Image (cartoon, rainbow, N blue to C red; front, top):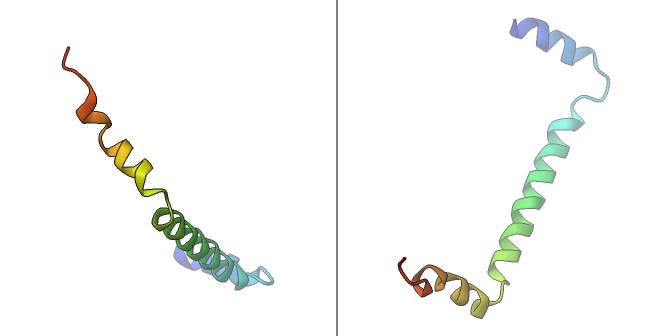
Length: 58
């Protein structure tokens, strides 16, 4: 089965660019996510972390 898939992929022209593009997309996404996480407002994070403790039991 893998031989059939391998043969089909080899016949597509320019197929070698797809793994490179997908790697760049995922890398840029996680770099952007890391930048967003580390630059997020610290007061807002502290406020959100206190939400479960502020609720009164029912």
